[in-house]
Each structure stands twice: as structure tokens, then as C-alpha cells.
Amino acid sequence: MRRYVLAFMLFAVSLTGCSAVEEVNRSVNYTSDAVAYINDASQWAQDLPQMAQDAANDPQAQEKLSQELDRVQQRAADFAKTEAPDFAQGIHKQLTDYNQTLNTQVDEIQQRIEAGEFTPELLKNSQILQTVQDIRGLLDQVQQLGQ
Image (cartoon, rainbow, N blue to C red; front, side, top):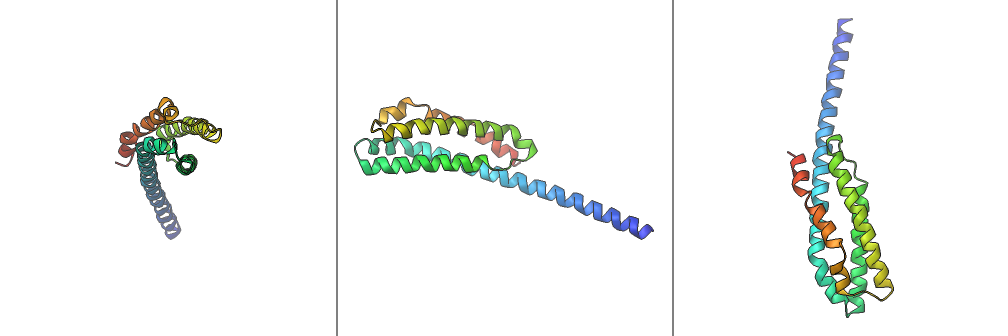
């Protein structure tokens, strides 16, 4: 009987240990994914003004800009599907809220491109770059999750 109790206790302890390791791995993975997403968004924001300037007079550059906007929306949608650990729910919600805002703003720019009404000033006057800056502002908080 003692053997069964001891075996059960060892089994229970090993399950608890695996659960803790899984949670740590999930936390590290989430932090890495979030940092990569934020860095991608930051790079995109740096490249966007030049892409917009190029798109002003070049239909091929306009198509490239449109494709890039689609890619940004897809990247945001993919990140929103990331499962955040319990302790990161607040930051994850902030990021997904910013993503929704960004998605709406990108849709507006896409509509203007399709209507032939795109100008670089349109992008400058939009809030897209500010939204990406807001996303970038969460980087320190996300990096602290991994510590």
C-alpha cells in the first residue's frame, strides 16, 4: 500500500513539475513572439513613409504598398491569435486593441488606394504611425514579462 501511495505522490509531483515547465516555456514563447511582432511593426513604420512617397507617382509602388498593408494586417491578425499566459493578459489585450485600431486605419488607406485617391499626405495625416508608436511603447513591458 505504501508503494502505491509513494508512486502516486511521485507521479503527482512530476505532473506539477511538468506544468511549471510548460508555463515557463509558454511565457518565454509569448514574450519572444510579442517582441518580434513589435519589432516588425516598428520596422514597418520606419519603411512606410518612403513607400508612401514612392507610391505617389508609381502604380507598381502603389501595388507594393497595398501588398505591404495587407501583410501588416495579416501579421496583426496572426499575433492576435497568440495565446498569452495569464500574467500577460493585460498587455496582450492592449496589443490586440492597438491591432484593431491599426486594422481600421489600414483599411481606410487601402480604400483610398483602390479609389485612386492616395497621396503621401494622406498617410501623414492618418493615425497609423501613432498607433504603431503606441504598440512600440509596450515593448519594455513585454520584455519585462520574460524576466
